[in-house]
Image 1: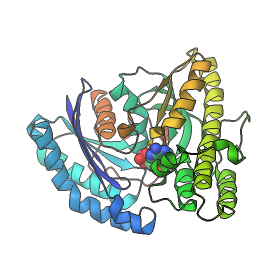
Image 2: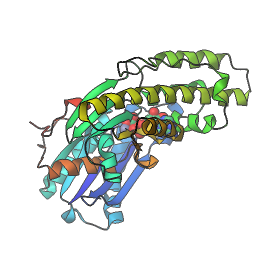
Image 3: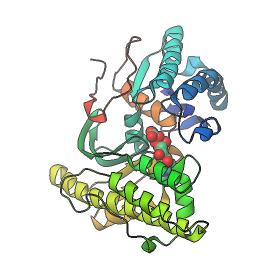
Length: 345
Ligand code: KG4
Ligand code: ZN
């Protein structure tokens, strides 16, 4: 079974072809970074227009890369939300058009489910597992019990983890996107130089908060001696260490709850763009080991937005018998724990 996946919910135009033997036949990602960089963030209107211009050609290139024709494809999956709605429309409309023209099933995929199931594609991981989803727009802990069966343990009360990285990058005059730039700068830094807060650390409920940390970083950044490169690196490292501590503490508590509820020690899965961060992965791996569990993470290139994860989630749903109607409405908001196995119903 071969599924074509389309991802256009943010600033990556992506197309992939994935089969049920977990082979990725093509996985193309066009980043729009250069178009958004002058604005220091993603401009939704620019993103949508760019998806519209690039997507048809990228579908052609993906089919060429995989050396298959649409006749060999069994389903067309596209991110139908959550995300920047103009871009989501572009991907969904092309997917529906291809499905209608070829008489193929259309699968409306939830972007978060794409992140959540990536480890099933890359590692063949079995259900259930505990998911820490950390991206630009989301920060949540979820018990993944099966396809379409997600139980939320907790989420951020304010900013997402990726948002905190992006805002910290701005305060440190680093280019967009902030996450990779902060990680690079932090490598040469001493985290002990700045004492930053760890919001909600040690609290029993499994929520996150990054607003207080962001304020502390702003105050420290404004007090930095001008031109002191080492101090900037130290602040980046201190910020990253604070995020690592918070994520590790929440993950530890969530693992305990997961074990109490399922009788399973994990595994702990980390997914989403922030999961590309090596320091955070190391902290979470240690936490999991200490809890008698293990960390499973997709390779960094499949942590950030891509279409292989969308094709895979579509494939799992297609294999489970799902078909979505061609009037399925794209949605800007679409929480993971609102999904069911038959989301169209
Ligand atoms: O999953 P993703 O590609 O898009 C969303 O669905 O949001 O995540 C993007 C987020 C951005 O905030 C970006 O700064 C962050 O992931 N990110 C990182 C790293 N790479 C990407 N954050 C920390 N360290 C990284 N290496
Ligand atoms: Zn994402």
